Length: 332
Image 1 (tube, rainbow, N blue to C red):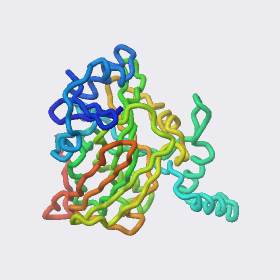
Image 2: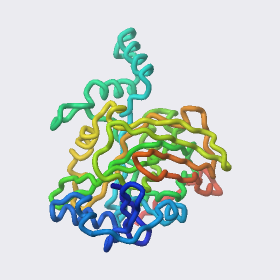
Image 3: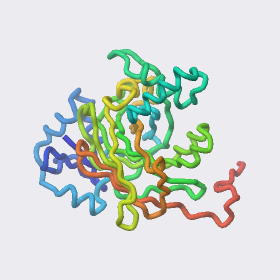
Image 4: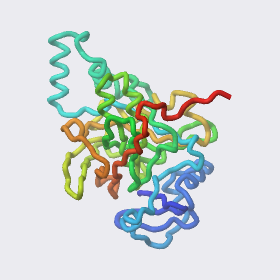
């Protein structure tokens, strides 16, 4: 089952090729609150509402009518976060890493490669146990959540604005502080890769950007292997196209381990908060030498998630004085 959120109110449920409105539902978030309140699953809550009028979901998407699948009415109570170094990539890359470690010793590996190796060795613990912690980063609050079709705006000071095709888990914290997973959605964890490449300690800066996710929320478990395609389209021509793999079969960490390390922090278990947690990627156009431009369109699609996620790149206007402080602090 897939759910989509209409801008201005209304929820669409899609099962197979049939998409219908959910009677009486204004938001997916409302449905999730109802499910938690009575101890039911999200799919059960939707089924109880009956069948609403049929809709053409691709037409709604093309018309800009679809929002992120979940959005908190107070952006301060919606958190966008993610993990990195979680995907295996190619087998040859893994073999090369192990060979390097054996030939030259652990001290010769970069910090990133050490973290990657830690994930391979300890990122999939037994059920109910915590494994090694992943790399973790903060994207922003709900104000950084971008709807399908809306532009991803790179700051004027950014050195790059590039896509990261990912899967995002979407969560609501229950009244008792327990996290509930609503489902999974396609995500574009938009980042500044040039800044990140200057020094890996700039990673935190490179991640403070908007992120898009949707247009459909997949309710239920994530398939063990997810296949998709990431594209960059310029002036109607595809200048980058590459398949990507996700799901636990292609990851060095289990989803449960990534969730456990995120929600182990009390501040991430505040009742009523929404979390969008992105699980990492192994495919970047930047790694293939693509340098994006304003107007480029990022397209991420996977059959497991239904409609594709498309967002154009935009850049915020440059200030008249590029060296001036963007938001001077004023003393009270």
